[in-house]
Image (cartoon, rainbow, N blue to C red; front, side, top):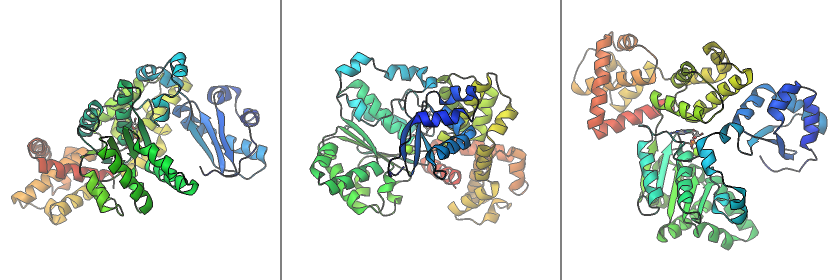
Length: 457
Ligand code: ADP
Ligand code: MG
């Protein structure tokens, strides 16, 4: 939130107003650990102990919260944002959280500890990450880099759609390095932070300090570098930072929502620098991996959710792991509040908006047929025709395979959409493509690319 003129507002004021508007139980349960992080004329930021709490408050008490603030400040409704500010109750129970917790004497003794300044989230570790086909290569590269920074892949460049684990992986490397060697200088920033830092240094005439800060690191992680697009001065500065670190054999880790070559307005010399290292793509997880992720996340929560519901979530929320996690958190919050297990129906109701959104984004057979025909330079009609030249037959099989994978249609249904073929033909196509992919790198890349495009459309 932009920093505007600060307001005189305290959490006690909000709490006293709010407690008159909601049940004592609800207040105790959801607001007893809340506090006020920031209040300016641009809005209010409220600190909460965990994301579960945030979801619940957003869904149930936002109106009351806004009203309370209006009453106290005498101003029209203003934006209210939430921030998770301390270890969550649910997370305190997870293994990794306990591992990354440090005793008070340790912290006091080591006031200048690297971890505190690194910008890393201690929860994003290799332990909390599920590995599957969609992130195997990125994961392997990350492990290699954390074993021997600046000796293997430099820079390491992750790209892929939103919520697929780019940030998580980059933090996992940093955390692993810090765990091995406390004094290693790791810094994680988003490209926006880097840019803001740079602009501030320009304005305050502290460029030397800025450069020292970034160039004396052992590991620099810059997240979402697509936002450097068009920012010439920042790119220029980043180019020099990059060279200085690279020449000093320091590790650089970058993430982006697309391959470097596809970032418009990114200087060519930067793009070519990125090619020096390794680019690893993160893809959308398959259903099994989605289920494994849900199980892992659930094991760190103090809530019970049935297998049936986990499977339901894994089949219905497909593309984005963050949304999958969000859905689970909502269900977990609900069960912990009601104190009993929920029915599938209740879950459907609870997640109505999310599921509708997923359905809207759903890939259709038509879209798949069109994309595949475009890729193979065929006419859409070729997908349904009886013609069988090899190139058409393969494209058709790829399209059937993708329909099976990306839609919820039955084999029969898919066959029918391909010029009245039977379910055996579709099954055969799926098997053929699966086996060809494992032997033919080019085909695998084509199919993966198509899949990603379709998922992100
Ligand atoms: P991105 O940076 O690609 O947008 P994030 O790294 O922020 O995605 O991941 C979004 C959420 O999904 C995070 O909470 C992260 O922990 C979780 N996540 C992503 N990939 C995995 C995975 N393979 N296993 C477990 N959790 C994952
Ligand atoms: Mg990210």
